[in-house]
Structures are given as structure tokens and as C-alpha cells.
Length: 425
Image 1 (cartoon, helix red, strand yellow):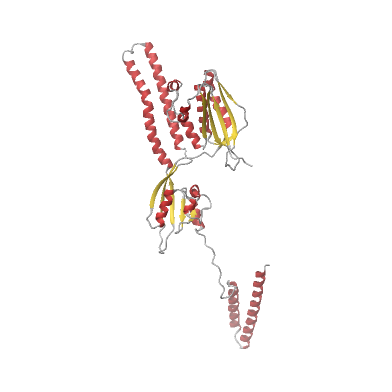
Image 2: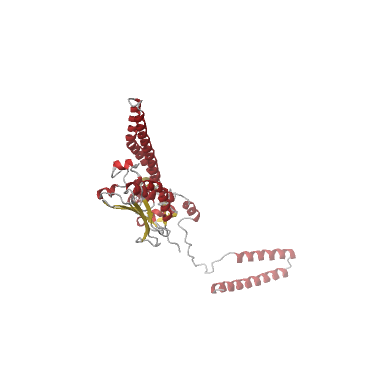
């Protein structure tokens, strides 16, 4: 028992003895005065009840003049916090001085952890939003602002900033609610890009098909040899349009989801082997051998289907533009990444061909839509000019990068650097 507990018990015992003695004296005096037994019983019951209520009630042991410190009240009730944490949109509450009262989990991407009780200017790095908060602090009305964050992938937001109504006449807290408009904005941009690209790239094959149809209806109508030749050309152009539309739809879907990084893990060594196996018939037709270096499993953070598409595109390009009866080599490795605390680093996959090489000035443009180093050869081999653009946007989503090295007359090496899966203890 602590010293304070012993002191409390001692005081209770003294109080109880004094009260008991007083009760006995009162009851004895009442009996000697000749009061009825029933009245004595009622008087005893009332006294005992009062005695119990007196000692049951909490009292300040420090005396009448002592003052107790008030309990610290939370800045936001727990129930309100739980409700606001469930919101998907980032939300912040600021006190009238501009300090953060509350930031829900979704707001962590903007202000980080441990932002409460700090001034908003110390935890937020978005000038447009900070300027809006300053205007509200200076007495301006509520307002909506639009802003963008360019890295690692550009995202678009709209924020509502304003004071919460107060009836006390005192300055009220400020509410900041942020909405992510990235998906909507990307959908609008991609819709416009798709229409522009499709109309531009489909114009040539459609014109060719239309021209051959007119020819078959005209002087080649009764020429079986010309008809077969023209029908084969039309079939090739139709297949080209189908590949083009498929690639455009694939690119649009990837770009629409580019701002959402994947969360799964995959063994990239096994994935590359499966991708190469699917392309074996194409390699065999050109007499090309695809050699994959032996390597232990390497787990990376990524989406299996999208990474399969990346390496199928790269290996397919190496087969298409490599030397006939040559070799395509694939190798793996791990590199450390500075500043990474989880020890994961990066996994690289290098795809080497023995082709003609790529001019140095063309390398920066390889991932542009519809860019081709050799337009004639690309179309002859069924290329759409979108393969490396698809690779670029998939790697952007994975926070990965593509490195291209090439020597004219020797060949090219396309190396993909992927974030390795965190090392678990």
C-alpha cells in the first residue's frame, strides 16, 4: 500500500470512530428521553444512510483551498477521429492559428506522419494550397483550388479550403478536403489521344484497303492472279489495323492506371523464361536462339501480367531486329540502391541482340508513340510503333526505368531496372 493510500485509510478510520460515537450518544439520549422504539429505529436508519452517503461521496483530500489541475482534453474526440479516418479522401483540420489538429491516413501522402500540433507551412509543400490557407487565415471566404504534383507520376487534385461554422464568435477551425482527380483527368486526356492516334495511324491502311477494293471492282475484276495478290495485301493491312487497335487499347489501359503502383511480388527470372518460351516459334522461324542466363529466383515488386508484356515486347524486338541466325541473350543481376533502408535494392534484366544497332540520336526517342528508327522494316515485321511506349508506361507505374545502350553494327542492349521486393527477416 502506498503512503497516500495509508493516509486515506487512517482518515477514514478516524471519521468512522467519531461518527459511530456520535450515533451512540444520540440514540442513548433519545432512548432516555422516552421516545418510542419505532421512532428510534427510523432515526437510526436515517443516520446510517446519511453516514453511508457521506463516506461514499468523493471528497477533495487536499482541503477546501486546494486546486486540482484540469485534465488535458484531446484536440478531437476519439469518435470523430474514427469517423474521419474512414474517409478515402485526404482531410486536415487546422486550428485558428494554422496548426494541424488532425490529419487522416489518406492525408499522410501530403503531410507525412507526426504532423499534428505543427504549423501547416512546416508539413505541406504545395504552394497553391498554402496560399489558399493563408487567405482563409486572413479572413477570406471558402474557396476551391486545383493543383498538381508532378513526381513520381503526375497527379491532379482539387482542394476545398474553408472555416467550419462557429456560433461562439471566436475564430473557428479550418477544414481542408482534397479530392484526387487524376483518373478523371487521365481519362479525358487519353480519350483525346486515342482518337488522334487512331485517326492518324489507321488512315494509311484504310486508304490502301479502299484502293484495292476499287481495283478489284475495276480492271482487276477478272484477273485471278491480281485478285489473289491484292487480297493478300488487304489481309496484311487488316491484320496491321487489328494490331494497332489492340496496342492502342493496351496503352490506354496502362496509362489510365499508371498513377497506382502495384503491390504484389513476382519472380522475374521465372517470368522472363515463360515470356521467352511463348516467343520460341518466332525465334525459330528466323533461326535465332534465345539464351537465358542461369540465375537464382529474384523477387520484384510488380504486376505479373504487365511485366510479362514488358519482356515479351523487348525479346520480340530483339528477335525482329536482330541478325538472322543470331542470338538473343538475357541476363539478370542485382544492384544496390542508395538511400534504401530495407536493403532491397534493384533487380536488372538485360536483353541483348546482335542487330544493326541504333543511332545515338535516335535512342532518346525510342519510347515515343509511333516512333520507328526504320519505318519500312518495322512495318514489314508487323510493328506498330507502340511497343516501347507500352514498356515505358508500365515501367513508370512500377517506379522502374529502362536503359538503352547500342553500338552500330554490333547490336543493342535494353536493360530494365525493377525495385526488388523488400528483404524479410
